[in-house]
Image (tube, rainbow, N blue to C red; front, side, top):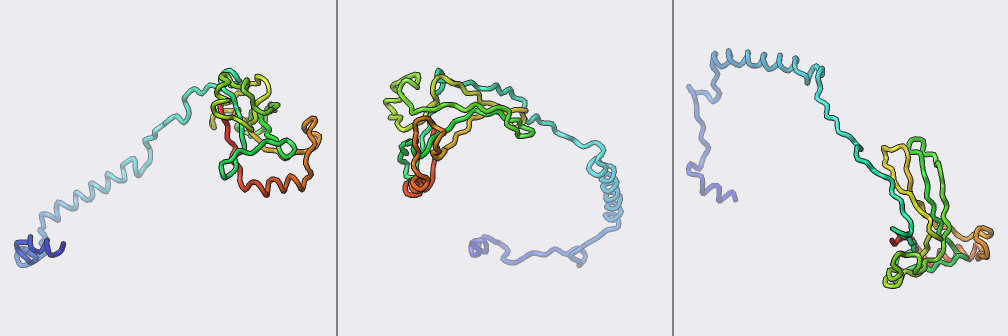
Length: 208
């Protein structure tokens, strides 16, 4: 690249213009014009809003002015079906003697973070009639999934600037005797061994 630029240079050497034998040249007229301009700029700065900050320009943009209605879900418009998927993408069999899926619909005060209401849903293994279109259950092989028992509804909504939030929480609970009727849990050692030997991580998928 240097060679190319050198060949295109018609002078091959730098040119220096001297005015009255000097490389830098000053005139009294130029000095006389420069000082007033300098003082005008200096005074303008000190009198400007930037320096005095008397009339700053503030841009007001609403953070959340959109209407966000709460959404109501039930079996007629959306079916929540939860499955436990291991890190090798296999579906874990839901065996209540080892663990169960708990689903709650909670309302939280967005300022104090206090839980105002908790609606704990009863769950069961999903069946074809849990879906508006039973073929959905059959075509997508929705096995070993947990659904809400009955036509229970969910209310979801709220924003971080709203006073209240309503959302769904899903828990994966190890079996504990006395919490599910008719279920006798495995021993604590068996439950720990079940998780340690079969899973290294969990992903909770939901289908709708």
